[in-house]
Length: 210
Image (cartoon, rainbow, N blue to C red; front, side, top):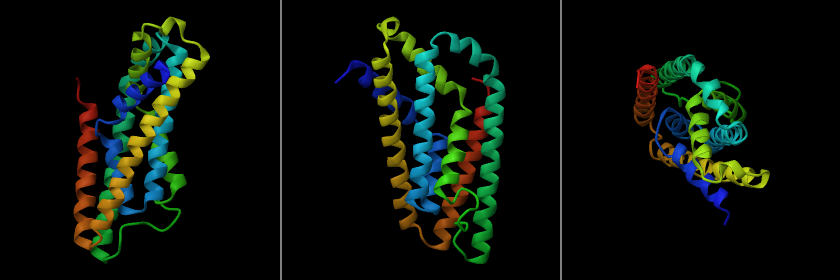
């Protein structure tokens, strides 16, 4: 197997495995709606990782100077979006609990359809500039970076896509299992409250220095 593809796999798992707000969103979507919705969100994250990996391969060192000045504002935007999602999830969970209905919205509302989930998670993941800097650093750190051709670059990006997609889909599957195990009103209330609280905490953490 190509060294570039293996490097892409390692890089993709490296950026995907740490559990953060995106993973919690995917888990929550699968638990409250369906695996199709969670899988769409998972593939959106993988798409963003693949795009950023491609940009890193093509852009190299020049990306650091471009991204760094706007990293702070993008972190603020991402935090605001996360806080909005946390508030919306909390509201829907509480309303559903009070009315004794499931919190899943009808088709076409919120993030309850695969298309909307894909678009929302793709946009949210692209708001994280640290991802492209991570990939740029890895690409520049490779000893053969200067000799990278189109084939090696494509294999690297393919490795990133495969790693990210496999991990995010695993999270989506886990959310489906959790959703089936917690189908009662109380279980859905607890998971909804915990998910919203964690997303809000991660949004606040994104604004802290360091």
